[in-house]
Length: 172
Image (cartoon, rainbow, N blue to C red; front, side, top):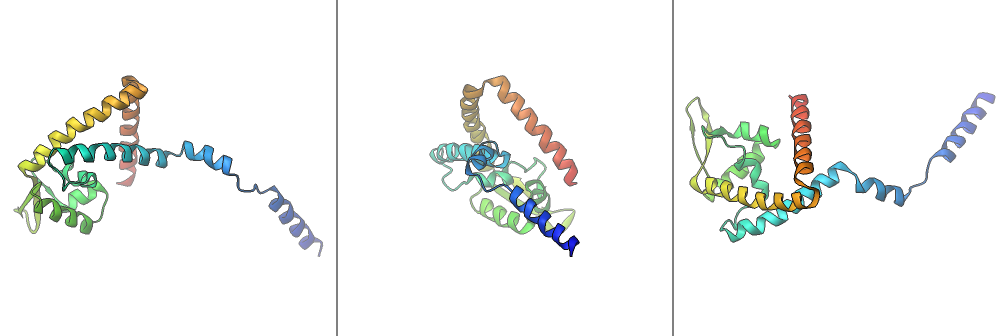
């Protein structure tokens, strides 16, 4: 009986010690939440680049397709390798590859080493797109440099590269 009273009394003390939900604390945490900040920065970049690319004749291109286009090597890349690099399923990658091939950003050939798969290459339109993306991202970079300064932006990018590299090694 005494043991159960102690447990009940202890649990009441613990419950009283629990903090109530605090919106002010949530707002303070939310301002510095890494995932949220990266998402907002990506959204800013995408929202500024898509209209520019649209004006350059890429009305059918979405920034989410960059995970395909930017990972294709000059000797070609298989669907499985693209899916791995982009961290998406093979099925999702196949769907994007089909869309991009239809719009002439990429083309595929049978894999000479494995007839069950194809090798994906950049088409001329895909190469042109990547050159135009570079010009658009340079404009975004000028804007970001103007806000925090070139050196701080370089340090930020170096930090992200270091984090992504280390985390990528952990995933392997």
